[in-house]
Length: 253
Length: 260
Ligand SMILES: Nc1ncnc2c1ncn2[C@@H]1O[C@H](COP(=O)(O)OP(=O)(O)OP(=O)(O)O)[C@@H](O)[C@H]1O
Ligand SMILES: [Mg+2]
Image (cartoon, rainbow over all chains, first blue to last red; front, side, top):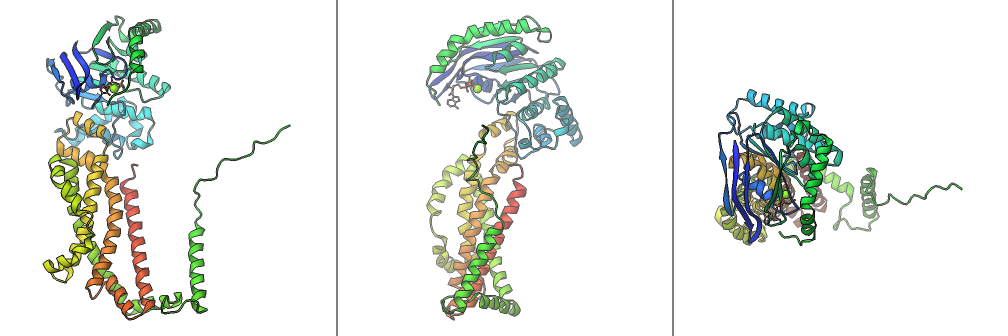
């Protein structure tokens, strides 16, 4: 399924946060979205997944999502958004319960997602018993269990400490190496963008406009440390001034 | 020279001292006993602890304790259940539907502050002096705080969880039952504590205004007859009842909110 973002502009009560975003994302592509804090990254992700109505413009899709996809646009949230009263297994099952599946099919799918994310031994645990990294694995398992056509990740690793982030990034890469899928990955960590994206979209500070789209030619699987470091450097040069400016701005909202 | 760093942390942490409450309780009882037996307190103002115990024994033997307690518990149970069910229905609707909120919030805010016992005479006119007016008073008294607690508890449910549920395409009624209601549970249960004590106050007040049986009626009657030993026994029953309900609610909270 291809996605086209056409002239998307968004205002919150007159505050312009996104201005004329034009972007096409191809089937199976992983696009990272970077930009200074408050430039509208989360807003754009909300619009793409249908959680927010843009003030102007639209998001269109071409081609059907994969047949077994229960929720074509699926999010992974920065704060995990787990139901604290449900066990790991029940949190993942939440995404399936309103779909016409047999109890057995549901169970199989949940187990498969838990195994894929390394949660097999934690099925009965409550979120409060888990570390941040494990909680986000639940968030990822819940997203994978519906077989999304497009995965929308809003700073999925930002709430984690550096080592956990590293581990989860490796795991994400190995999961993604096995399953092709379209992914839009918001981050302000340039290293993450350089490591797991096919293309990096750099937004300006608010109001967010596309400053540049950087394609990374080396495939993710064979990308070495040198390429990643170079890309990181290049991205940083692109947003450095903007980030400094944005940092000095008074916060709204 | 090797000197240990002097310890100056610790201090203000609350440490459990399980024997302290019992000790305080026993000391007070002893003081009371001594004061009564020495005649510092006249038996007409406050009976001795032993006579209160004897009064208890007498009540149990004659079956009056059971009778009064049963009548009060029945009224509380019925009134509380009715008020709670109606309150949850209205409160949750107000938390979930903007229309219900806009329509009902001013009304609830206006009626909430009325001391509900003031409505008993009206309820007696409507339902007669019997059970219905007492139960209605309790139900009414329980209803409003439940509405407010349930409605406020819905607002406390993290918005990000609702967004998450929407993003997975959960139908609205699933969002209510799987996200909003469980998320509002802590607030609702906290409300139960408040309404339980309101129900206890109202049952006593209502029984004092007109009832043959019930702990409130019993206390009023013994006061009129200056049977202070029975009167204090009645008050002790109320205290025990309150403690018991509190303990029960704690147990429920513990099991329902295990996830916290
Ligand atoms: N619901 C809202 N109402 C009003 N203003 C909002 C709302 N949500 C976000 N904003 C404002 O819109 C701007 C863009 O917000 P958004 O969350 O999309 O930025 P972001 O790029 O994701 O930022 P961050 O890097 O901090 O996550 C910010 O200035 C924010 O304060
Ligand atoms: Mg954001």
